[in-house]
Image (tube, rainbow, N blue to C red; front, side, top):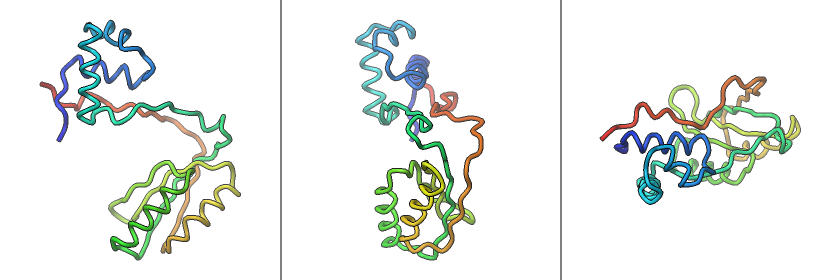
Amino acid sequence: MAAVLNRQDKQILELLQRDATLSVGDIAEQVGLSKSACWRRINKLEEEGVIAERVTLLNPQKLNLPLTVYISIRTNQHNDHWAAQFGELVQGIAEILEVHRMSGDLDYLIKAVVTDMPGYDRLYKALIKADLFDVSSSFVMETMKQTTRLPLTYAGTG
């Protein structure tokens, strides 16, 4: 169920999505609230799960992870035991950033970052331990848009 957000909640979320290092005082000033009222709203948004976590986004290029790869996986194993083992396997591979179970022709879509093609080969060899039917990879040549900011226009208002 979607959270009910008022205008000030949305403003707070927009500010935090842009810069989670802003102080409560800075946020309160920008949205027209007292510091304590702003702090209570932020805590409420965290308790309700609207704010899932606060993180620092790192530049993969600066960390020698210049190659982003999307890996499409199909499997013949459609049972809970295999899915649990696959989940454990992908959780243990640091280069894997996202794993999604998909509808349609694909079973899973993985986003990963690697150092280079030998780095991808190591990742591939780790993945195929899961008894996969088909693995297909596409490498990012250019990123035209990348954001972690969610649009707040669809959030319910109260």
